[in-house]
Image (cartoon, rainbow, N blue to C red; front, side):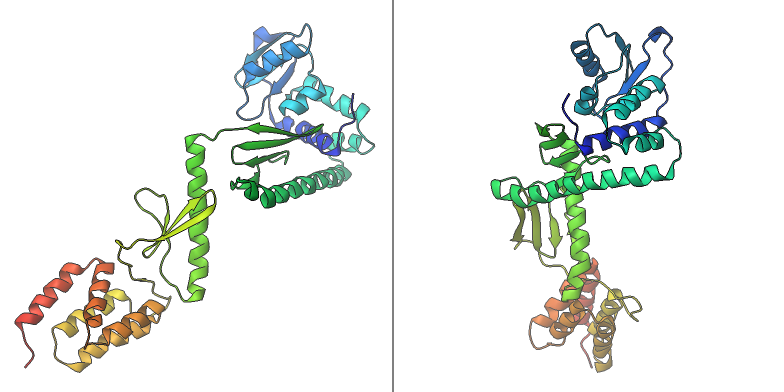
Length: 348
């Protein structure tokens, strides 16, 4: 039997510890089948039973839900290869006995902790082994993150399990085993791909909404509301791809105003619009200045842009600014009605 690496010993001790939470199923017809095992999430109990029949001569067994009951303990190599969880006193004791015989001097302390002796030194010793293991896995993840994009794999590289023995890289699943790394191709389901896509959009929109205001850009970043395939920043569309992000300007989508109002502002954009309608129907200069005053109180970059355009009443910019605000607020009908009233009531 070849020597097992510390990371594998750490996994076996962790499995011994975690398995304490699983009760043994009560199946009367399984008398004599005292060694229970639980496959990893997504694993097939039927496939594990077939594997046991092929691996251990004369072994008997059966399945009960997600669990497999056997007449003999499985070899340690099988537990490592298939990432099994021993369940019940017999299977856990068999694993504990193997660890005491084959692992290093720290293992008995770890086994005592896994079996619930409460020795405080066990936690520290086990943590040290696990931290060394985590360092190795994290170094592998960082290497893959740096290298794989240059060979055409742009998928996120993530540690996929709490035991830190598996790394997912898109369709590739890398598992640390006794002889190095085992690589499998794991096609994503449609649901998994959608969830990963939405996670990417949500993360990116949160990042941009936090950063852009510090650059003077207060336009809210939002996920495309219908198909959820891209981020929208005004008329800028950012679509995720395997190579990163593809940026396009949608010329058919008018850029919407940023209606952000800082906390504590004395007025909001509806106040600006109401003042604008009042000014439209009044010849008094004070009414026009009330519009500017409301926008100044908001004080964002969008407000300053609005003031610059609205103040220029000698060019189309004045009317364009008013229409843009009406469109952004969804109050175009009110602005249209005010425009008609203005034409009917000339100033004295």
